Length: 279
Image (tube, rainbow, N blue to C red; front, side, top):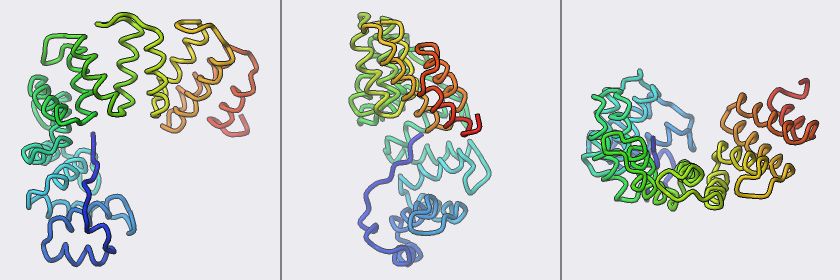
């Protein structure tokens, strides 16, 4: 789910100046103060107080405030987790034509949290947001076409939307499209294109993409087999897994290094970073 913030000239003011405008009822100031309190930027974080100010702005039809208030209810940040309340605020943001709100509401329709599970409605909302250029929605729309949820399964449409999202810098979409080229789903199997897309996704922080590149180098799929290159990519994957707090996949990356070159120092280095120097 997305919670990016719109630009706001009030950001040039200090917190107390923003608070003064918020107390006077300025919805942009209320939104910004809520975000500062939510993130702890320039002020001590206070999730409950953030909810109060986002609510004030959302009641004045501030689209971003409604969307981010929905996120707080969805996560249970500053309030008790409440998917129905999250859906209410996402719906308001969606009606205010905020693509992020449309996409977040669509995700709830996919999961059935707070609203009925309805892939057709999810498709409608994702499509609106995707056509506005929101990469997250483009990737999700591709997923609906790939799996045939709410629409007839269509790999070509899936690839089209994954490509749109990847072109907008979405790591997950680049990874998904790479898998399609790797497996030949709806596109001509093309290992060169697959590895190029995996590299893009890895550069944008997708650990599975880096791991798959390691496998391709290890097995000589689409490239000449090269254990040294495989080790490099498995190590990159392990570091990315750790950055996401994923210790078990990081351990598997260390094992993959060992399967390429037994006793390689990068495997020991990665294990030390996972378990500490005592391991």
